[in-house]
Structures are given as structure tokens and as C-alpha cells.
Amino acid sequence: MPGLRTLIFDVADLAAARAFYTEVLGAPPYFDQPFYVGFDVGGYELGLRPAEGALQPGAGGATAYLAADDVDATVARLVAKGAAVREAPQDVGGGIRVASVLDPFGNVLGLIANPQFAPPLVAARAGDLSERAVRHQRTVALPRADVWRRFTTAEGLRFIVDEAKVELRPGGHYEWYFMIENPPGTRGGEGCRILSFLPERMLTFTWNAPPELARTRSQYTWVVIELADAGPAATAVTLTHLGWPASGLQDDPQWEETFRYFDRAWGKVMDRLAATV
Image: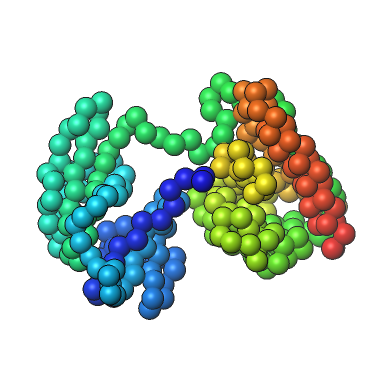
């Protein structure tokens, strides 16, 4: 169980709830259908579905808390958009401040500012980065623009996978689906994100282990792909896989297995790139 993923609210008016949360979250849903609307909230999902039968809005049971830099200001903004205060902002110790509101559809929405909780983006923390790296280089008979498209579009990635999800922006999805027929969460590089890029020069993204390596799969490393001219119509492609935790390589055999796996796997990816030109 790699972590929490989705919170679903049942709403009587899906269109109104979609509009409310689009404005509150500052972005449209990534999935928008008459039976379900899903928002990407910092890598997690807030889902809305039409209330039917026993699935009805209500303020009971568990309360989900969304992160807020300024709880008081966020409560005020939500109230201005039609929410009602359920629990006024309060300090609960350790610099943590919480509150909750009822959205216009009757659901409880918690808010929390917790300076002590900052989940690491990648497995290797400061001071625990191994010097080891997986590195492969190939020269391919394509100009940089063509190689760039191969790594930064779902269509281009068909040289290695049939389906992929690419959102070319920092924080955007970067997922390769090697086993699309598998259940969600076991299809390949799910949950991976673009960290940064320089068009036609460099792409960095987080990466995770395959499903069979369960202990390391939920802990992300990162990959850097660099492109350089190697002639009139050729490109030198360098792939470096970094972010290996030194303590993990020492203490958990599965980290060593993961390292060896990707040394083989990235070599095959680069061979396939060169072979398909």
C-alpha cells in the first residue's frame, strides 16, 4: 500500500460541485465525465460523484484534510464561495493549525497547515545520497528535436511502450504503462512526475521500481535525460538514473536489486531507441 490516493465526495449537483472545486483548487479536473469528476491535488485525487441511493453527502465519519499555507485565509476564501465554517481555525500544538468547513454540498472539508509534515519527493534525503548512478549513452541518427519528441510525448514513447501519460510541465504526470492490462497501481511507472526540463536539451523526472519490488516501489528516485548534437542529423543521448539512498543500498537487499534491475532495463530502453531509428 504505497500511500493515500483518493478522497471522494458524493454531491447532489455534479456540475455545481465541479465549478466550485475548479475555482477553489485553481485548476480544472483532469478527469471529467457525467459519472465522475477527478481533480489532481498535489499528486492526490479529489473525486466527485453523483449522490445516488446510500451514497449521499454528509458530515459524518472521517474528515479529510487538505494542505493550506494559511488556514485562516483559506477558510475566509471558502466561506466567500459558499462554504460554512464547521470548526474555526485553531492551533493544536507543534505549530499545526487546523479548521474545517462544510462545502456547499454538505461534505466536510478539513484544512491543515503542518510544518512538521513534508513528505519527501524522492527516496534519498539530504546527506543520504549514494554516489552510485545508472548511466547509459547512445548516439542515434536523429536530430535533437525528434529525439526530444520521443521522450516528451505519449506518441513518441511508443518506441518502448504502447501507452503513456505525459504532461510536459514541472509536476506533470510522466507515466509509462508497460502492463496496461494490470489493475491500477501495477501498470508500470505510475505516480512519476516531471521535475524540470530544458526543451530539446534536458528532461528530469521521478521514477519508481516495478510492482514486484514492493518495498522500493513507493520510494521514488529520479532520471536525467540529456541531449547533445553529435553531427548534422545525430544526437548523443545520455540517461542517468540517480537518487539512490545510501542507507537503502546498504541495509535493504531490495534496493540493490532495484539498482541492478534498472541498469539492465535502461540499457534495453536505449538500445530500443537506437534500433527504431
